[in-house]
Image (tube, rainbow, N blue to C red; front, side):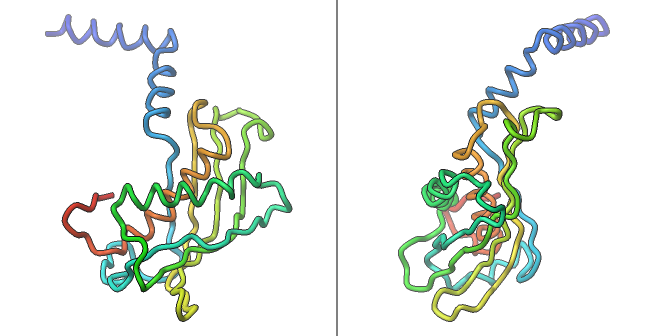
Length: 185
């Protein structure tokens, strides 16, 4: 048994030294895509599934660039499609009568080709998102949403749009009632 543990440790160290961990990380990055994280600033807490119980439609409104044009137009152009895909993945309703609108502004856009790669191929976009009842204009919540990439295969505006869309949908999903067939997380 002790010999087997030593052999596994040596094999793991040799794979790491030859760059196989990088290959594994890149493969995982390709399969999983960009990540989205969200920090709620105002409104209902995560897990308050009554907060959005009456809504049967979720739309992405306009996002503006608070970075003086540094956010590529392509990222905004791709965000709507990525938002729709993220809603479908979570099996959230679309096309109903009561609509929650997500709108906001990009606060920071990081491009590794401009920022350097001291910490590896990390890119991210941070947006302040308001979640608004479309009919009344009432703001139900505000959150910072982050789309982040950590693998070379996930660099660029499309993947950051994917991560940002996932973050926005994560806020909605955390507050929408879980029904049969809907995914957790």
